[in-house]
Image 1 (tube, rainbow, N blue to C red):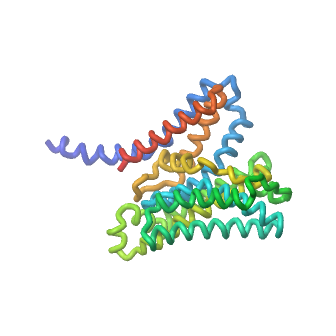
Image 2: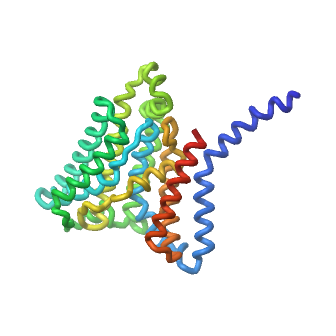
Image 3: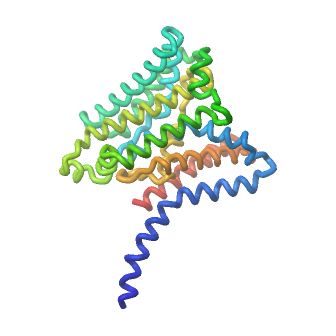
Length: 320
């Protein structure tokens, strides 16, 4: 009798711990599948692997900010279009005032967008889904208006090297940016009071508020963090492609949310992992690269991406 009553309390933690490793196991299985099926197509070539890291860098960086937003019980649908807007802001400002002014203008614009999202969500009470959905259109329209739908070239070699186009030895600069953002994001979320308050706010806003946490302030800050992450991604897009374009980041919000949720961050708040979000981003990158090498058409790749998002939501709901 004692054995049967003790078994559930012993098994439950094991099951809970096992579920935490599902994203990592999924990544290994997907990588192994494409490695085996595309061995002769060069999937495992170092050049192709570095290409995957480059292509997923901006999604990975934005997924860190999205992890904070989702962990706090909110969502940011404007993140992709904000990246495109910032690439245009940087290109235009740099063309008139130089590199330093361009970078400063990009970060400032990202901060302002996040602040507006935060104020509308926390002070006026508009749900973040609607606030950021509207901001998505505003960001895209502003980028189109300020560039007249044209690509704005960036001719500064130093900027293009530092923000996306360079390599430090064999390592792409984009990978270094991703690693720095991931480490800082992980440490802040897991090792600081602010990170614990973000998770507490998303877990139960009422309980967090009664315990003395400024939940509105927390939500405003995570939305600013998300927009600053999008600003950095926009600058990296601009540096890699040597231009600012309003189309950059279009549709990225879906990939970013899918990456975060696939990695273990809950859509309903209270649970988030930066490391998991990076793994989720790499998982999507591996799938996209593998499908491309398999010869699938773009329309078929879009179908596969939609299926990934559905799976991500299903995993999130089951974990909740």
